[in-house]
Image 1 (cartoon, protein in one colour):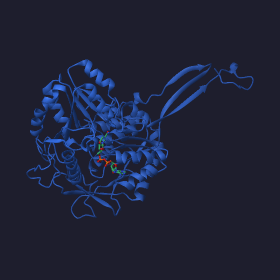
Image 2: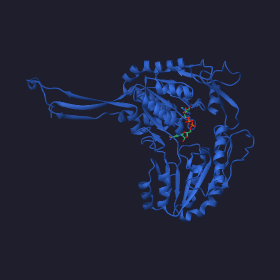
Image 3: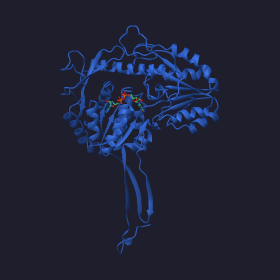
Length: 492
Ligand code: NAD
C-alpha cells in the first residue's frame, strides 16, 4: 500500500491520476517500454489492509492489451536472445545496483557461469559433442500478494538474463511493487519489450495458459490456482513450475535450547501475520517439551499488532476482510472440533485502525491431525499445536500431511537432527532454523502438494527451467580421412 501511495507521489509517469476514478491513482500497464493507461471497463480497488481505505485501482487488461504485450515480448525476443550473455549480464548488474539488497538479482548476475553448456571432445574419431543452453522465447509469471517484490524477482531477472523475454502478471492486490521494479529495469537499460506487465485475474491467467507464443509459466500462489494453472498450461504444451501452499511443522525436542526455540517459533508463526508460505504454522511438542506451552503463549501475547508501517509493529493486518473471516472461521472450527484456544486473536482492536483486517496471535492446542484447523492452510497468525511422545510419531504426522514446503527441528542432539532431516519427506528442512528458505545459489525446493512441475525456482534449477538444450555433434575430418563409401553404421 505504501509503495503504491509513494509511487503515485514520486513518479506520476506510471501512476497518473486516473481518468476513471476521481481521487485514487490507477495502476498502468507496462507494454513495449511504455506505462499505458488501460482501456478496460473492469477495475478492482486496491485497499490498505490496515484501514480498508481504497488507495488505488488496478485494471483487468483487455484481450487487445494482453495480445499487444505478448506481441511486444515476441518482437523483442530475437534481438534480446542474440544480445551477448555478457551484455544481458550488464543490464542485470545495473539493475542489481538499483535494488542492491535483493539477492535473487545478484544470483541472476552470475549467469555467465551458470548458463555454461557441456562439451565432450573426441567422442569418436574427428567428432566432438557439445551443448548450449538457449532461451525458450516468451515466458510468463503469475505472482501472489504476499511477497510483492521478491516473488516477481524470482521470475523475470532469471528468465531475462537467460535471453527470454517476459510477461509478468502481478497479484491484483499488490500491483505497485512490480510497477516500481519494471521502472527500475527500464532505467537499467533493458530494451523495450523485454519485460511487459499486464494486470488481471482469471481472464489474464487463462490468456497466459492458452497463448501459443508463451512457452513457460512460473506460478506462485495457492493450490487452487496453482493446480489449475499447471493443468491448463501443461495441456497447452508449456513448461509450468508452480510453488503453492503449505502447512509447515516445527518439531520441538525436549533437549532443544528452550529460549532460542520459543523465540524462533513465535517469530516464524506470527511474523507477517502468518502470511508466508514458509510460516511455521504447526508446532509438534515432543515429550517433556509439552511443558513449554504456557511460556510459548506468554511470548506470543507480548507481540505488538499494528499497521505494518507503524514503528515497532511485530505483525500487521491480513490482506482482505475475506481473509480475516476465513482465518476466524478456521479458529472457530478448532473449538467446535474439540481443540483448546489458548490465545485468541479474533476480537483484537487496534487503536486508530479499527477498520483494519487484524487478527492477533492465536494459539490452538490439543489439535489432532483430523481437525479442519490442522488440515487447511490457515495463512494467518495462528499456531496449531500437537503433542507426541516420540520423534518417530512426530515424523509420521509430518509425512502424512500432504504438503512438503518446509519444516524445522529444534534440538541440541546432532543424531536427532540427522535422523529427522533424513526421514522427513519435506523439500526444505531447517535444523534450529525456523524458516529454511534456501539462498538463491540453491533452489526453492518445496515438494509434494506444495509444488507442481519438475524444475524448481531459482538456483541451478531456475536456469534449467528458463533454458532448453541444443546439442551439437560435429565432425571435422582432414582431407585424407574422407569417407570412400556410404557410412551405414553408427560411428563409434
Ligand atoms: P492466489 O492463488 O489467490 O493468487 C496468486 C495468483 O493467482 C494471483 O496473481 C491471482 O490473480 C491468481 N489467481 C487467484 N485465484 C485464481 C484462480 N482461481 N484461477 C486462476 N488464477 C487465480 O494466492 P495469494 O492469496 O495471492 O497468495 C497466498 C498463497 O500463495 C498461499 O497459499 C501461500 O502458501 C502461497 N505461496 C506460496 C509460496 C511458495 O513459494 N510455495 C510463496 C508465497 C505464497
